[in-house]
Length: 358
Image 1 (cartoon, helix red, strand yellow):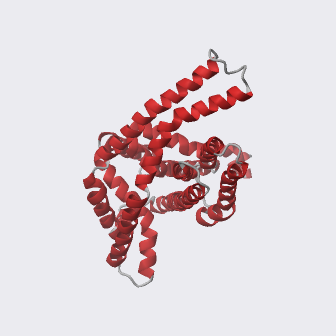
Image 2: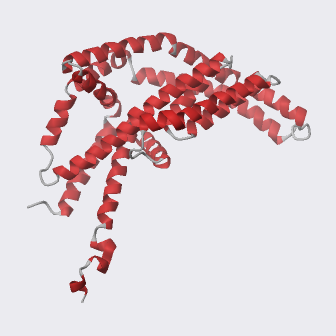
Image 3: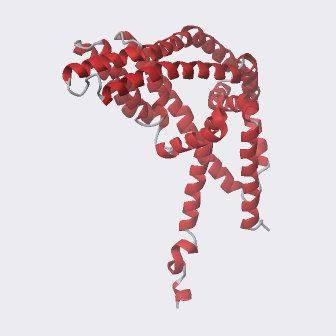
């Protein structure tokens, strides 16, 4: 006999409370494990494909680990130093950009920007705030990153955890499946499959789209000679996982920088606009349909809320688990709505046979 619904809700509620409590109390401790699990989840299809080519699971894991290590070293040596330098320079040059904006507005609208006008004082304060607070924010973020992702975690712990999780991923999934309550195993498997497809669509597919577009934007902006093009391209690519946000934020930043740098050279400004127009065309017509597909996705508003809520409550670890939790809650909510629509509570007397109504 199955457990009553009230008891089931109680047990699942206790499990959710324990999960949130552990996330809050052990945030930094479980960070490398969460990262390792996320990386292993993303690489599991690659390992499965290598197995179909005749590799053993151990050999496939070793090959993936070596390839990832080489790629990480190349990125660390070639991209990260330039990215940090450009980000720092962009923060430091912000007051000069604000001064250029003031001069432009003064030339075009002299009445609005006299020495005592509120708009001019606001622009001056914005530039000073960006320079002072922006530098502190950047250095604080780097210091925090170094304290959280210390050398042991970054170079040893996370790769080791990823290696073992990736090697045993299929066995762990089978063990979890064997522990499912028998009465509800089919439904749980179906929901887990929907959650997996959502995550695969979003994390693997959208992550690949972000990487491709970020590389394209950064390379294109640097080729046209835009200062801080690498930073603008990286921001646009990183925010692409939220529809339209990456293109809007990255595009406005890049076009704004282009206006200051190439003022009067309209062909270069048009080239910057063209880069983002091409990127949006390729994303909407080629990348997203082929890499993300039409499977169940995450609504942008729900995703932003999940990232904000979990990030505020649990810090960086909360932001890492926000996407899978949001996907799981979305799938469960859709399932609950379908159950509700099939219930007597929703259908009322219309769900009764004609004989019962009479």
